[in-house]
Image (cartoon, rainbow, N blue to C red; front, side, top):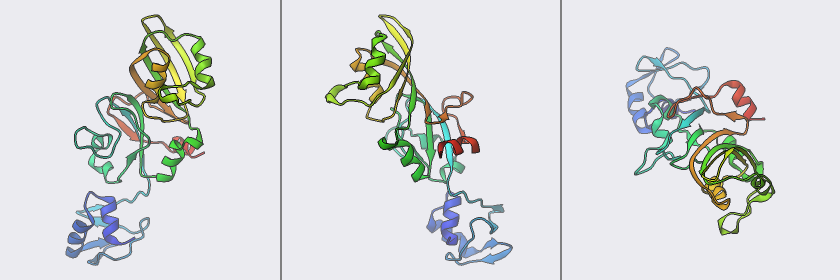
Length: 235
């Protein structure tokens, strides 16, 4: 990898900014280098900038407990994004949210720069299950479980794929449930609940495939995936 690209990949510096500091001299394996096109071995070479060794990570994987009023995007002209929540040292990896959660929806958000894994998790053909906890105004009746499993028809006449509805508590006024879907249509859970005659008042994503939201993460907090979590996601 070119030295200027290596520095811009492992720091918050742009390629142009990296070239400027390279001209002043960069220590690589204790040798002074001033050429931006110098070839760096990302794994074995010791590159020192401002007294610190730069560490290269090809892919990073972050689990976030997304709060409300934050959008699932890398940038937005109006609202705060999930990327804005990240510390500067984690933003340098240029991660992006895998799939989306509505602005007013909380819960599990995976951020990565691994496009292949992201495609695997959000592709409709892969049928990766996403589990949500939902609270609604209105009654969720037992017969709805089979209706949802058979393929609920929502507004616009779209027939959803088979989903699982697990009713936790239900009354004429309010109900609570878990719902697991394998799609990611726009506002899908809300539209499904509307088709069942209820209105979502609270929604939280709990899992994506084998990845389960860490209960120790407070809203707005995040951490790197463990090796075991990543291994299971890639199965």
